Length: 95
Image (cartoon, rainbow, N blue to C red; front, side, top):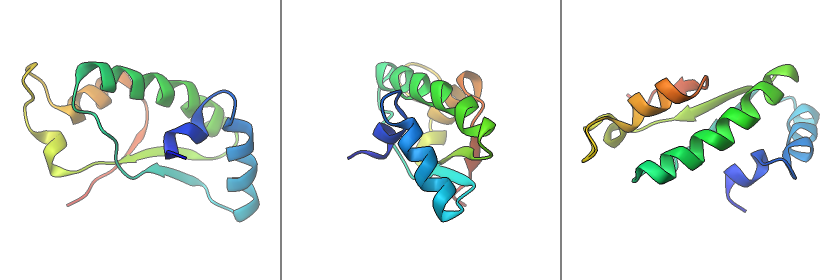
């Protein structure tokens, strides 16, 4: 199962139950294929659905980004910039 699958409408309640059981207050996506505008759009839709639901349960949703997400992509912006504009997730910066 991909980690994002746990954030979809049909699985998010199970995900919340598990993370509350183990005492986890940070759900971090360790990386994702965000190589096209369409993949970014799909990713942001999942994150924007899940973030307020997790927040209401005391779980912070974050994304662990990498250096390639700060490179300007062929469409003229960075992946990180797109995520910043389109979501309210916490960023776990990889330095």
